[in-house]
Image 1 (cartoon, rainbow, N blue to C red):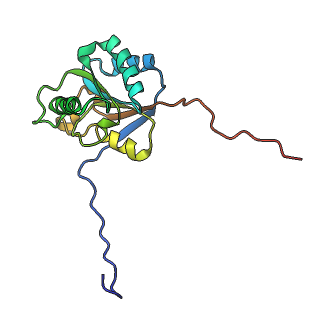
Image 2: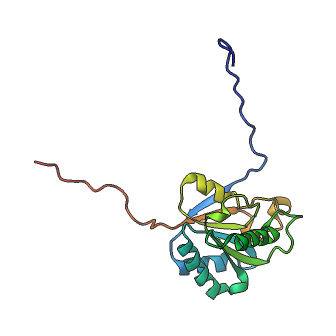
Length: 186
């Protein structure tokens, strides 16, 4: 910019992708998670459960596999060796990728993943359950929710999952975080 010239300011246009997402606090209990997913996925649908640690991924996957069966639960996390992780990413893209590119989107499925699901994967889910995390990561995770249009007004999604919903867990929502008053010092 030349001295004395007005700065040029440009503002990017709004994304063509938009829509409402309902965010809900959700208890951090694996049995409650399994019950809720059973209700939400009754009649079909694909859910993504994102955990902040590999241990939480494995714990959730164990309970969900016991409830839904191995064939309905996929695990993805950063501790797989590179070749296995690349194969898992390719499988996720094949099953949950964009309409027209994905082949064989399952009728009912749950993917339990660590932060590997946040970036670089063009995958699309009907429901998101995520651990509480910094807002930039939350936005990345939410980007996997209703990422692609699936029929007019999302009509190809199961009816109860046509509204994008994100359930936030990983914290005790009943804890009172207000500071307790302290007695004045003499």
